[in-house]
Amino acid sequence: MKVKKGKPPIERIKMKTQARKDPIAEISEWWTFDTPEKVAAGLCSTAAYLKTNQTWRMRQLAVDVRLYCGLSVYTYAGSNVSRMDQTRTLPEDRPTFNLISSCVDTIIAKLTQSKPLPKFLLDNSDYKQRHLGEKLNEFTYGEFYQVKAYQKVPQMFRDGLVMGTGALKVYEGDNQKVCIERTMITDLFVDSNDSINGEPRSLYQLKLIDRDKFIARYPKQAAIIESADNAYPDNSPDNGRTIADQIMIVEGWRLASSPESKDGRHTIACVAGMILDEVWEKDKFPFVWFMFSDPFLGFFGQGVATQLFGTQVTLNRILYTISRAITLVGVPRVFQDSRAKVPSAHNNNEIGVIVKYDGAFNKPSYEVAPCNAPELYAERDKLITYGYQQIGVSAMQASSIKPLGLDSGEAQRVFDDISTDRMSLIAKKYDQIFIDLAYMITDVAMDIAKRDGKYQTIYPNKDGTKEIDLPAMTFLKDPFVIQCFNESSLPKDPAGRAQSIIERVQSGMITLKEGRRLLGNLDSDQIDQLANASEERIFQYLDDIVEKGKYTPPDTFMDLSLALQLVVQYINLYMSAKLEQKKELQLKMFYTQVLALQQAGQAPMAAPTPIAPANPTPTPQSQILPNTNVGAAAA
Image 1 (cartoon, helix red, strand yellow):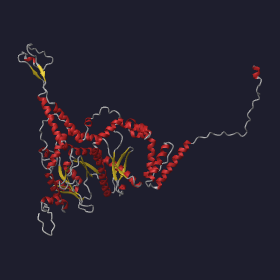
Image 2 (tube, helix red, strand yellow):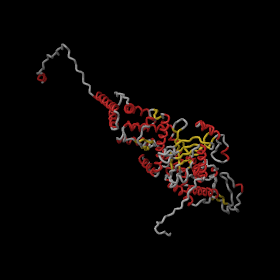
Image 3 (cartoon, one colour):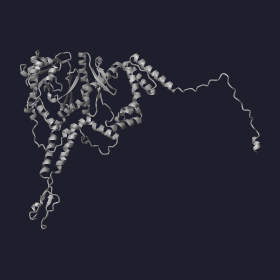
Image 4 (cartoon, helix red, strand yellow):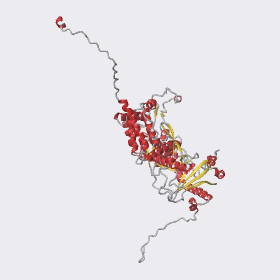
């Protein structure tokens, strides 16, 4: 390259820019439009453009679902995508081993046995914030119970394992309460360039919804909803044969450019017009995500079905070959000498038939030819083993087989921990679902409480249910951290749980009463409740003091030694957390009264002192003198 004298060389980079007058550029910036008609038209046109150009992704998802369960999946893609995955290269009656389904179901059964419990961590804060964190924990558990989180998360988890990405939508429902909804990843679209780093700024959801239900939710937009055309999940002819009256809506989110800017937008529209338009101030979309395998580029993850696609196809072909060979070759065949003069009537299907043949010739023989080479069966087993190893699933877990010699409870627990190590990353992602869900539920509930002035939920516990009021918790300004803990660190099966508790009681780590509480055996519920009644009563009195300032004096019917121990622990715990002086004095008063009752019960009772009479009668003295000659007389 020639360089002019006195001027430094300049590297010229040729860049191709998109013209602003391009219609695609205009519809892609629907959030900048100012009229409802333009916003609705731009949003619907953008969603239509994305789904038209991402048919390849819909085809892959349809294939993944068919590999897992053998069924088609609706994609709302504007074309008959349900026909894309109906190519049948193998007959229906072939023997199958669904390796993908086995791996997915094993992971689900392994990880969804536990119930992760998100907890707000406020250990280093004062008493008020710590008490607020406890209320937030109770609120979270109550909301998980209300929205049926432990039933819907496994469904979303399965979507992520099969299709690569699972989604749960968190939103305000029709009853002004938080709701969660499993959302198929085939309903969600992002721009490929916008999401190349995994963090898209815009997200689009297509959804079929009942017309009357949508009118009941947005009565002011009834005219627009009534004028919208009927919509169907797919363009196949069978989908039009329905009595349902549904419309297709497009919901779009645009994240704000910065926390100070107000250019974020949330819009719901249909082809007839705009239904909802509001400012979106949050820094994330209202979805909780799970990705089995994080993508290197783009937003959507990769699932088990995609990773095992080649293995499953090859396995199907081998199984088909084995089946065809057995059908064609592996049948008994009768070899009969034509000169033996065997009557044709003897060749039948009867049992115990006597076959007469000429002895000068060989008798008829029955033979079965070898069907397949041993290498074919070995290749089948090797593919199954490789598939399990690739995903990290144990073949014994998939078959519910226990290794030989693994008989003791401790050995089984250690084996269970080792087998979980390969799934540790997936297990952390599964716990993260509940952490993200707790953050998002609390955020939506706080928005409702700020608008309506209150938000209540029902918290179920062992004593029944109680109401938790959210507005008192909105004063939590300091940042808080949520971590996920398992519902119980004890084994899940009754035998292993009982053995672990017995070992802890025998080692002195817990008392017998604590062991009864942890056991939770339904066969001995009444006995355990009676045995733990005194301890539960003490906890109730102390919790009333700390939470409500309500004081109930102790009495002799409770376990005074245990009450003395627990009240000392409460005093040491809450005095360092800046407990109010009134409640602190109540705890100390409870301690003093328990100590007084204990000392009064341990003091020995003195024997009663007899009262002397006024005129005591003198004790008569014996007048018999000792006979000193008794011994001599006897002698």
